[in-house]
Image 1 (tube, rainbow, N blue to C red):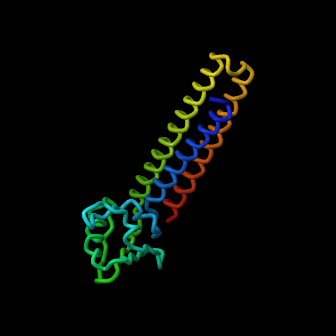
Image 2: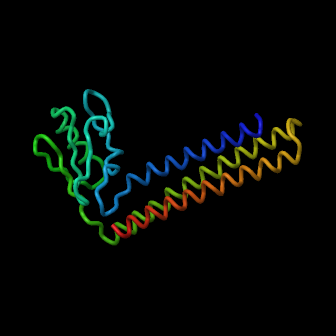
Length: 186
């Protein structure tokens, strides 16, 4: 593997780790209603588990309310059941055509728990990024041992991987800090 291939692979994998963190953070409640709150909900319908967003449109017409409009009205009961079964603590109201979910204000204790969870998710992402750095450095060292690259190239490649690591760890920190602020102000 060339140095370019190793660094490109490392960057792609770090980007994926950041993307996973973004998705996980989107599912964390703030005091405001966002369609991302129900992204993780899967509905058992037509004999299989289907993501909610494939069965209905989800909107937030007010800061403290979600509205879910099923594409097929016959699935409304299944969607309601899935939301109740998810551990999001949401209470759906079904009027036969749409489901409304009022998002309650968060207590201080709940906010603190959510911030703790955000920190855990951020740390998991940092660990994944460091693991990717370790894999990239191993590949670089292997190339040097097999005389595919010089010692100087090896060092500069490791520095490049370290710069990528710093960049993505900083991005993780920014994402986490931003989400923590959302949760605490909500």
